[in-house]
Length: 310
Image 1 (cartoon, rainbow, N blue to C red):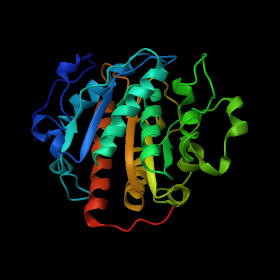
Image 2: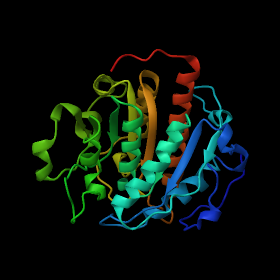
Image 3: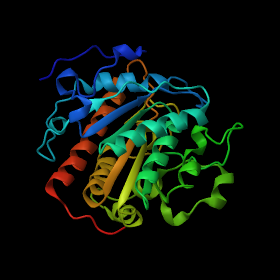
Image 4: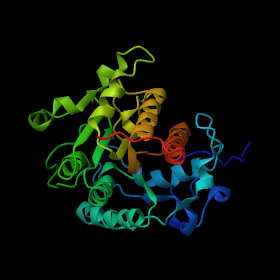
């Protein structure tokens, strides 16, 4: 069993950040297949504040994971996981998007798999743009409670409520787990590319028809953005805008495993962790989610599984 740290909600200075997986799992950037990019930004959230502390809490929780992944029979950290310094976050979300885009683009150019950890959901805009530029024909899979497709919100096109409106400007989007939407978003929403939460949770255990549908809609290269409020609040209570009726760990894990095995994941993010006293299970789940997804992605690459045309 690995050493345990003391749980609880904390705010860390950048120098205090734990490498993903803990110091023994850290890899120098030059030998890493994966680059973890913390983006401690909470500039546009509109209810509960504090997601800027999410990256530090997630990274600390990651030091308490066992590093052997049972489903794939692998140890993903042996491929090399480097944790980059946190992005210096400007107050303006448009400037933040540019800063994240530059850093993600650099990692893609170097042949690494970028993993962005937020912070609130607006941190994804720049990362999606970088991936779309690097991989023409890329599509985006969004796991989320909210559609996030407003053209503007509170005077900004880069608000967290607009992230998928910006994403669909550069790539087709598939949305899963959605259960909260403003009436103004309906007109531009493509219902054929939305898998509503109620459609998913109504299915019996083991029914993967909704996963089959999501996979068919995606192109060969995929960016995955995971807002933790896509999970039901009983699974992840520590997020800023929880919505009832969400997804389970098993449902999300099954979807991500299929995507990793059937598509080329160019990059992904996990956002909207809001560290909350007494709710450190949410921090651990977020860290474990990244590690599980990495395990599936790296196993698929190493085994040379065939990738279908989109």
